[in-house]
Length: 381
Image 1: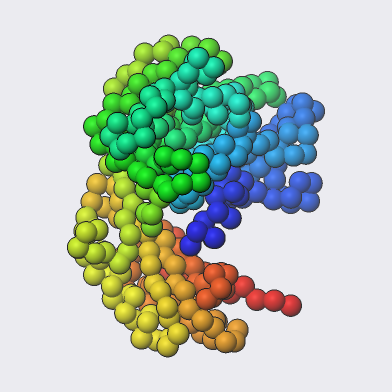
Image 2: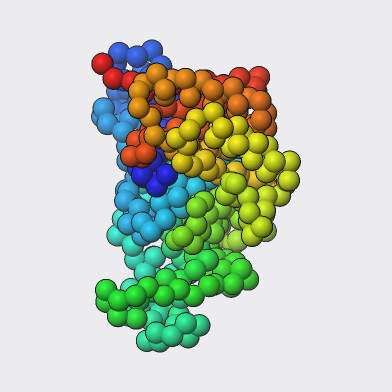
């Protein structure tokens, strides 16, 4: 799962624009206007899509100025990175319509700036959002690292053939556990950060970040700040966004809105119960049916995302050993039948079928709200 997760994570920004095509030779790639083409940029996709159009400048995709910071700062659990980026875009869609805004990777906070902000506050780094090092090495005495990652997303509008910043979303990732070493290359220790302390420190960081961003973009750009709880390093699911606030102007932080969104591991256990028992039963029946069909099944696991107590979507991974392409094809077809029969309908479902070496052999996914499934087997020529 982690191997596949990092591939998707590194490509996620491009994948946000699902209808992307090749320049000049694909009707799905359109120039924004004649004037925009002369100005050196184009947009991908179409503005009636459920995904954002992206920006291509002088023939190249416009990447983030802080690209790579999130990966290096959060490499111990790559599922956090995937959940962070995907969830941030989902929150943005509630405030910046895909039909009215064009997505741009963050251009106002560069790599050096983000690294300074994620550091500890000190005489050499007064911008650090994390507390200064008090020299303590013992649990509950050491000043923890609270703020783990920051990401900027820009939302643009066209004005007389030019793109102008019309909105911005800032994601701030907060640790639930602080990991540290008492000596270089030594054992890794951890301290649990309470929910109350995480939320308190997150609000302090958000206020500082908003004031700093305002200095770069002015007072009239709407800014959404979304707070993310980092999953522990050993978690089988990524973290989740727990609240957000919207600043239409100025530097005052308004009221916070709770998202009530959280991810869960499947199959459920006594220590990890799903909000809805029916969903747990559905997955267990699907897992049993799949395992009974194929003798070489080694693992069937899943991740479910809930808003309140309602399931929003499922990601399932099946790992098994294949000996022929016909086995892969037959098994994939059967998985699609079992999914339609046992799994909840009306939600997005993605199923990856991996070989024992971790390579993805095929996938199954929902085709829309009609309960149908699409299958694809990765073959060779």
